Image (cartoon, rainbow, N blue to C red; front, side):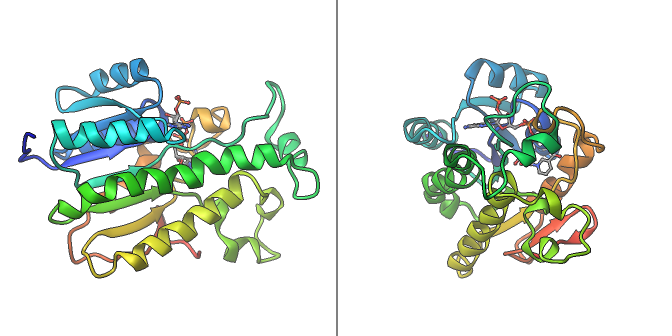
Length: 253
Ligand code: NAP
């Protein structure tokens, strides 16, 4: 086992989009960055684009063998993990090319959604986060001040969606939106469990960002989308745990 003086951060789903930008930014802040990618070759290309301090790690968050191998490799090759950014997510598995977000959302209401679609999205966005976190907690517990940042979304806010005046509540549905609500619940549950340990666990929302996830219909750049996750990843030991924040501050759960 080799010990690293530099702090080490793992970002899941870091081969493109907001995850890649988070990895870039953490590298610029002096971290050794592990670029999680389910496709190893895409991870290599992404890591190369960041530079010498970045390393590709094959990691499919829905594959227990891949998760276990990644955790073992991180312990063996880097000997520490200070920051885990759970960023990997999918928005759907059944949106056909040409289908608008509005059309997809009509076909995935609670009354008509396929349970396979719900399960597939939750498998990545909720259970994947829990599985990766469980596998890496032993390493995080050894770090002096570790942090877990879960990349969630404002669309998962129950408080906002329960308000009849919230303009986007018509798109609140059982697949992606509710997966982020469940991710928020996991974030808070873990924050509560780890309260006595110094490991901070927080959820962030990037805002509507131009990425593959939404067919590049987002309005913010990836630099803007990555900013809150990076800010929270860099907070010191006196900072709060169990928060949900975005570019404009706290978001109601
Ligand atoms: P993106 O460009 O589609 O990136 C998603 C990343 O997750 C990709 O690298 C993808 O890998 C990876 N991924 C998907 N399934 C995976 C799996 N099973 N194992 C490992 N990696 C997997 O989307 P993004 O917008 O950057 O999304 C990043 C995060 O921001 C997500 O949590 C998303 O929910 C959140 N978010 C985005 C927005 C937005 O407007 N874009 C808004 C709110 C929240 P492949 O390249 O192999 O597909």
